[in-house]
Length: 482
Image (tube, rainbow, N blue to C red; front, side):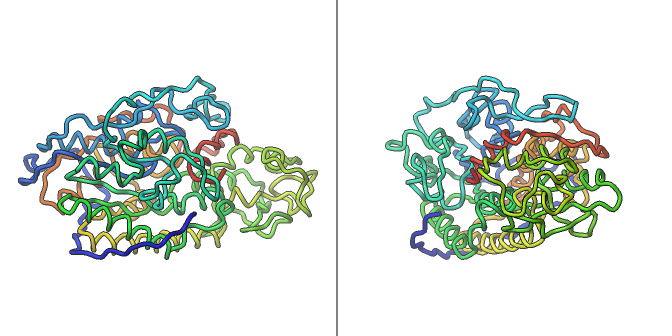
């Protein structure tokens, strides 16, 4: 990541954060209204979570339920005069995979596995490119905090290499509309801005098993960047209401919690998983039964290799183009259960890597809270909220949701991005904070009215969801890990 000098802007008052906890019934409350506040324009800033990216793709039928689009609908009910909330829509089945050129969207391919991944469909195409102004939804999949004010990474490769076509799709016509996310957001003169950046500053590290990049964005750099970003935004829009969200615990998502218990259930009695710790390329230096109080986390990218446990072979090395096996590796040994053919470092988040990710998230969220208070921004505690879902579930609109992969209802097929109903749950967390902070009465989204995932998997199943290794190339492109 490129570094520059950053101004630190400190202004203002802290906005108290109020929450309703992890139980919530169908939308109810006082008469809808904005307490005399005029809202004629709402702009959302963020990454894939803001864009409505779902199941490894950006596609219109999911974008319709992006949390900012849902918020805009509820704002209109409360009296905001927003008109159409404009998004960079991409027709179904969505965006192409950077490697195959086919639609990247994950679907259920077969119950025999089950196999989840792209169907090999011809991708869709951009729908709303003729819009003569910036989009209201400026969620750019893959964006890190650096990208908010950066004008050079959009169409060129950076160091380390980043070539993300979704930047150009969303921040199009830059000579007229503005070269940065900030410039395009401010050009719309919004009365309300939601701002949720920073997830990718740690997520790429975690999802790659701490391999690429080898560390999250440093807390000092993140704090400087976040301070500059939010300070610049507040200075440009001094009268706008700004609501930011903090960074969830990346290890609370199904991408990290799905495979470990299933592998543990499949290991023969007394047989341990032999794995490589952070930075190891050869013989295993870690051993686990995956039943300890705080076991290593197996990433969802390992789903294609979990069925190979105990069998000789070197598929992982072949898939990743190794010209020769690393020193000490012998693929004639049973994979994953012999120290000379261990579970690869890139497919596991070990204790040290978990601690690194956790420390970064904590530091980032401390910075977000302080910078938000200094810039009169309200804060949505997404971190605390998702941790409560992970530990005890969440009841809303007559439905109980959990953090389980697919069957929990919150997350889509890629184990990272929300489902349609998950987007509704997130929208409601923003609305609750807006109502509490600004004295508004925006009605909540009725989550039960949103589409549910049509393919629930048994919560008690020990069947591996098998996702082909190549199917992760699009997610890895977003996170800058490929």
